[in-house]
Amino acid sequence: MPRSVVTGGAGFLGSHLCERLLSEGHGVVAIDNFLTGTPANVKAFKTHPKFTLVRHDVTEEIHIPGKVDFVLHFASAASPTDYAKFGIQTLKANALGTHKTLGLAKAKKARYVLASTSEVYGDPEVNPQPESYWGHVDPVGPRSVYDEGKRFAEAMAMAYHHRHGMDVRIARLFNTYGPRLRLDDGRVIPNFIGEVLRGEPLTVYGDGRQTRSFCYVDDTIEGVWRLLVADRVEGPVNLGNPDERSVNDIAHLVQKIAGRHVGVVHHPLPPGDPKVRCPDITKARALLGWEPKVSLEDGLRRTIDTFRERIEGQT
Ligand code: UDP
Image (cartoon, rainbow, N blue to C red):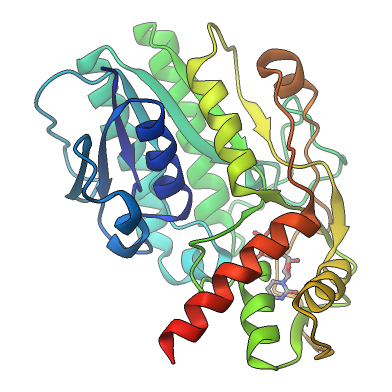
């Protein structure tokens, strides 16, 4: 039985990843310090005989008895609101946490997957962004704790690859959404869904013409799985949905799908907010035979349904 260690295993992406690995027959050890993750995220499979959840901070040394075949480092705050609040923890999870998880993978002779981000491209001057684009990042800007943390993590993973011949794979994940995102996560889709369900106008930052490309979580996880099991991968791979939309489009769609018109209010654009973002997924298509399958409309419908259940469950 293959055995995987997933850091951030009680987070949004991490918990979906653990669930997928279990369904593929892996034994899974999830590590989380519950800074932004929660045990509630693993409720559906907590009692699975091949699943273990360990409370631990990945910036400290990690001890896992027995064999480990795969280490997947998914521990990090990921929403701009969270990493503004937990800046130092975010840098530590990506610097020290990447070092510790690479050390674990090296000791266990395990394959390593790093959850990196489209934020390594910063406020891009090239759209869509191919993996060969070096990015446009402000090293002291409000997003630098995350952007530079992930850039350091990529550099560290590559250094272990070159120095120790380790098999490392870097997933550059673009905006992902779906069930288990926290209602107070601060990202645009959970914010808009929470607002529409409460009957409040949607808060659009700036003029709403900035763009993002949203990938439904099942598609993202399928891409990560394929990246994990592919025979050979050189360099980072973009995983995201190239369906680029403006924030105004998202506001319109969320209201349409929720069946409720609430309008929008404009708030100032946060400093450092990228103007465009869209993945070039040529490499993932060629190497992994992967592309997203779930349309934004379908993904939003599924996400709104689960948020509605959660909000109704709270009352
Ligand atoms: N945004 C918005 N209203 C919100 C939250 C975010 O208009 O309530 C905008 C934000 O300014 C950005 C886009 O939506 O341009 C995506 O923001 P998010 O925080 O989801 O992720 P990012 O891609 O910026 O990391």
